[in-house]
Length: 361
Ligand code: SF4
Image (cartoon, rainbow, N blue to C red; front, side):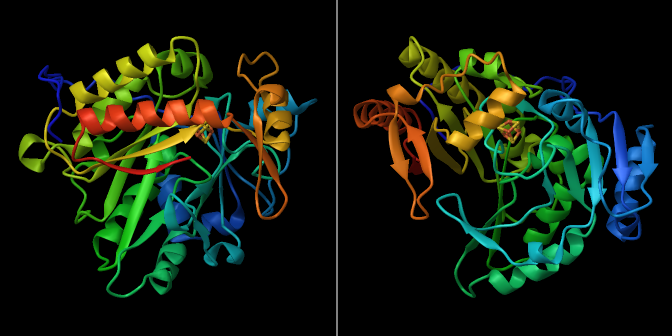
């Protein structure tokens, strides 16, 4: 991407240490350990010397604490390797992000106080990695439209890069989509350990995106993630052409959740400055813009997980939006939405004239 900025961020000679999540326990169900992909995950976690337990049954138990907060803490320190149920082979659409979603895991090791998963996954928020990923991938071809690009999102219920050093599953998905004529993979992350992805045969069929935000939001609300600066350096590595040591991937930025905090214009201007510095070369770049919203269910769960949160979830200042099933969510009112949208779209058009804004929501 040619940008308005001329400043150059040198790629460090020695990559700084990536932010890697290390679970305090790794549980395998008997069904997962019987899968070749489960064995591959076992070899990875053994090589990291993590405490491993092979369960007697295919059910996860013993993860509940005295209260929701304790259950949250135990779960977020646990990786469970399980077999995804047969129902996972039937895909659901996921507009506006992609045509279809599939899952290599459910649950996320980060601690974002606005987490999108709150209220949408059942049970303790343990990180479940799926040992039958190869079977899932084999079924995806049936969803591709011949002769048309069909997109598949793999980050709806997890941060796939956040557990990649433990599973290798994201790389397996990238290799699979590199062999497809009509299938395209999309993933998004707030972590930064991308070195193992740079040399994969992706064939331009994977778009790697990073979720970023203004610094006051990221530093206060996104616990356990890599810094925004590190995410942008990871994005730079993935987008740089192979001749310059990069991955040559199509890339994207998801700016989310956008919030009109105090001095929001200057904070988001600073974010755009940092993006422009990291992407000071031509690349295939998209933007997705997502304003903050919450539901009654997500608010309840988030207040159990983060009782002292400073996240604004005051319904009285929001507008109610209903979906076709009667569910409600609280969004910013129309005037605020318009002001924010105009700012973001004009900043992107001015600084990244060849980038596509995929949607605002
Ligand atoms: Fe939730 Fe995404 Fe943050 Fe993970 S990275 S805690 S899924 S908002």
